[in-house]
Amino acid sequence: MTLDSREAFIQWLEHRARPIVLDGAMGTMLHARGISFDECFDALNLTRPALVADVHRAYLEAGADILLTNTFGANRFRLAEHGLEDRVAEINRAGVELARRVVMAAFKEQEVLVAGDVGPLGVRLAPFGRVSKEEARSAFREQIQALADAGVDLLVIETMVSLDEAHEAFLAAREVAPHLPVVVSLTYTRDDRTLLGEKPDQVARQLRDWGVDVLGANCSSGPSQLLRILRAMRKAVPEALYWIKPNAGWPERLPGGRIFYPATPDYFADFARQFVEEGARFVGGCCGTTPEHIRAVAQALREMRVSPVSNGVQVLSHPRRFPEETEAPREEEVYPSQLARKLARGTFVFAVEMSPPRGVSLHKTLLHAALLKEAGADVVNIADSPMARMRMSPWAVCHRIQEDVGIETTLHFPTRGRNLLRVQGDLLAAHALGIRNIFVVMGDPTSIGDYPEAMDAYDVVPSGLIKLIKQSFNRGKDYAGNPLDEPTRFFIGCALNLMAPDPEREMKVLRRKIRAGADFALTQPVYQPEEARRFLQMYEERYGPIPIPILVGVLPPYSLRHARFLHHEVPGIHIPEEVMRRLEQAGDKAWEEGLRLAVELVEALKEWAQGIYLMPPFRKYWMAAEILEKVTNAA
Image (cartoon, rainbow, N blue to C red; front, side):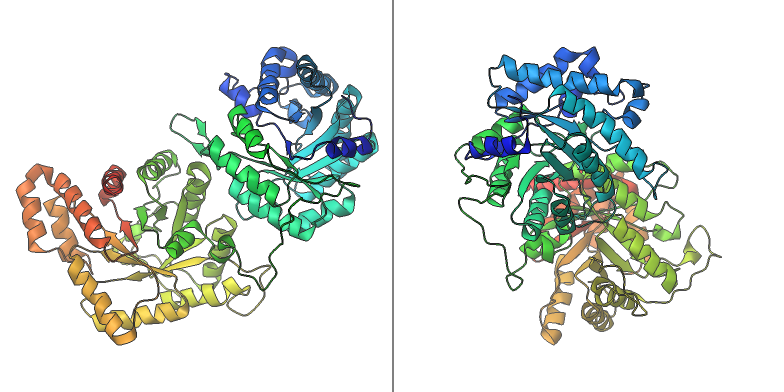
């Protein structure tokens, strides 16, 4: 069928009392069939039409009610990258014809719609780039005119990174094809904001005010995030129709360059039900999803029912009441990070320390982080200039690991060497990069490192920095009381020495950090669990139970020489004679004894600690991975 008006689209919906199933990723499937990411996927409508048709057919057979044309990047700016800017109309017409032929061949022309897919231009718009809004709208008009002339049933403007670009695309659609229904769907960063910082509720209200027919969210980091975003959008505009197409989880880059999406079809289907329960009428998949994902969605939604729409307004058969302000907030609103949520649930957490590289390449660092994630690490801690040695800034390392590997990080944040201006600027930078876990420490003195003459002064001690973050930044103001544009959401760790030579002083320092707002503690390496536990018992006798989770340090000695160095030259570390004897007896295999010792320590610490802070010796991350695999498999 071909819809000839927005009213016809509403009538099509009215004949369907169930949710509408959308298709999944086109690019993922084309890449799986051997097409390089360097090629122009849209041009395949002309050069390899059978391949594109096969993908459409697979989604149709999986149960999709709407097929999106293979035209996501078929605008003149993106096509110019391949020298195809003069073939915009041809490529878009071919995309529509391919999808339409697949639908007709299946005798489903009365059931399945063909949507013209319009993606972002791939260029920056003014004032952040050189492309004016008029030029952007002209490019959108050119593509949308071709899609409309070829006979699409509706237009889907998707994966927009800002309201500005979305608006130009929408205006172009209304100018060129005012009769067609239009979906406008934005994508979000890990902070649940668009690239320009717009919140889901702002987006929903703006799209409604423009007169968009269907409000959408797609791509982003996966089903869980888009469920949060849907809730926020529908709370702001409860009467709208909603379109949701999440990625199959956060993409991970595996060794060799392959992209992996972790969300399974069953997992995806579970969220599809939740999307409908929260008000979505259209549910499908974006990057990483396959016909198997869409088949699972179709089966999950088969028995679900929604009441007919009227004038574009949807009413659920079983309306869900949105939480009032007085109701308990959701877990993801209370806890700013995965680490915070896991510790709040009582999950035993494994954190592993990594050092930034000395040069500019992050290739090995990312591979090591992927190894640790696969072995069972919950979070990776990135040290800042350990031993006062020159290293890459840890913010960059944290950001790349989170983006490329998909494991959360904790940024070590020393106060030494930073004045108040730099401290606050660095915190804002870390927050902007998506870092939420901060481990506040004094830092190593520059006298022991590469540049002993470097400035070593500081304006704030660790407890003062914790207070600054928790009582100022996290409340939306800086040290001077000036307002920030919004509060930060940091989860703060502090240092603790369970084997301190002066336990009374250590307890007082810990109390000061807790009063300042510390959320968790990381300890120095422990080799005598019972001795370490006695510190906690002493604290409890004087002040009551320690109110924050403690992740206990474990550093496997690599050799007898290494153990002696730690014992004699590193403050706060005491290695008993029994351990020294075991390492000496192991000889050249001392590292194996160190592994065994670490596993024994983890098992003993599990009885009372909330997690382990694993420190691989000499950046031998394979040792950490082996320890993690042994202790997690044993569990």
